[in-house]
Image: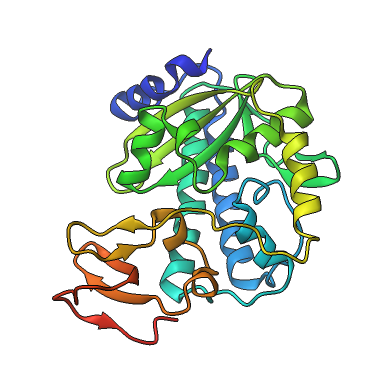
Length: 277
């Protein structure tokens, strides 16, 4: 089988409830249950990880963000609802892998540990022999996977992460299997790893975080309509260190969510969120 038919095979299995011949259904279900138990256990019992440590999962983050983290700057604490959102994402990703197995596709190397230039990480799996990273996303984020635009717009460093796994494994191709957690849509995005020099990136990051000089800002500010106000771009809005870059930033409660304004020339006609942290 091939990842080229992965999404249609999962949809067909869900629709017809016909399981591919040879699939150990009860074992897949039992393994799914055990893995869900472990995910919940990890999320309510594990201690916080060391933010100074470089890992494959963060090597693709922007330089200034990594510099803040490595040099011990205090970031925003995650809100309880955000922690639940992350837990929900892990549970969804485990469910997706169970569906992959039930649809007859081969899943191997789950959470296999790899290392490249001293940077360690755990890859999600290989599906039909192809390195794969499973993602649960918002409807907005899902478009990048469905339209295959992630390589040109990757604020969270997913490409560097999967490229690191790939280079450690000697792979020249990989894929993302993504699910829109709002409506259940699935998409497979294939990634060519030959054009990505992750070793160069790792060496740069190791040198950069040791410098005394803070790196340049990760992004430019974005005009907020025609108001003359300037807002933080999406990459900054998710960063836990944004108040170090914009200490006078103001936050306003728009219907689409909080909007972070670094420059306010015209007062928004919505409630301001004070003491945002």
